[in-house]
Image 1 (cartoon, rainbow, N blue to C red):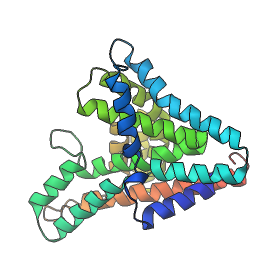
Image 2 (cartoon, helix red, strand yellow; image 1 turned 120 degrees about the vertical axis):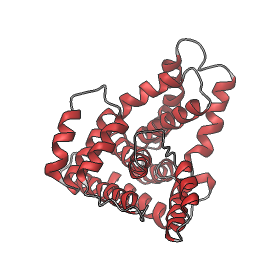
Image 3 (tube, rainbow, N blue to C red; image 1 turned 45 degrees about the vertical axis):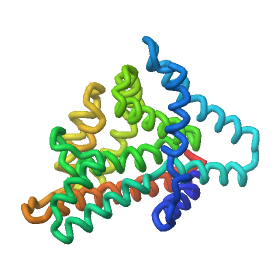
Image 4 (cartoon, helix red, strand yellow; image 1 turned 90 degrees about the horizontal axis):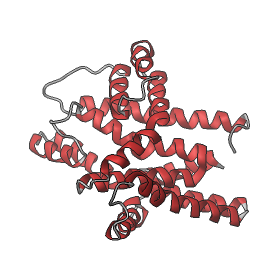
Length: 274
C-alpha cells in the first residue's frame, strides 16, 4: 500500500493543479498560531513543547487509522494526507517563473525569484544547492518518513519542518530548540538521500564526501546534502547561463526520488514493508 500510495500521490501532485487546501501550511500555520498565542513555546522547555505540539496530530492520525481497521479506508486517508504533506505547489510555481525569467534574460527577476525560494548570497550555498535542499525537505524526507512510519510519520516530519520555519521567521526564542529537533529528524533521512545521489550520480567522486560526513552528527544536514550533490554531478560553469547549475542539480534530485521508489518497490516485493 505504501508504494501504491506514493505512486498515486506523486502522479497527482505532478500533473494536477492543487488549491490551497492541499498545502501543509494552510493547516500548520493556524494550528501553531493557536499554540503560540497561548505561550506554549515560551519558557525553558521549547523543545519538549514543540515535540508535544507536532506529535499530537500524528498520534491522533495513528489512532484514526487504527480505528478504521480496513485497508481501503486506510489507503484513502493515507493518500489524502500525503497529498497535503508532500511537495509545495507555490515553490514549484516560483521555480518555473525563475526558468521563464532566465530564458528571456531577465536576471533581476531571476534574483527575486531565487530569494523567494530561500536562496541568499549571504549563505555559502549555490542556488542549485538551495533547490536540492527544498526538494529534500518537501519530497525525499517526507517519502522516507512515510515509508517507515506511514502517514503519521509524514505528518510528524512536515509539522516539525513547518514549525521550525515559522519560529525562525519570527525570531522566536524557541527556534533554536526546534532546529535541534529537526537536526535529529534529518540525520538518517539526509544521509540516505545523499547515498542515493551517489547511486544516481558520480559514485566514485561523491563517495569520499559522503563517507566523511557519515559518522559525524555535528555536520548540518543541509551541508551534507549540498556537498554530496555537487560531488555527485558534473556541472560546467557558464557565466551567461544561470539555469545550468540549478537544472542539473534538480534533475539529480528527481532521479534520486525515482531511485527511492524503486527501493521501496524492492522492499515491498521482499516483504520488508507493506
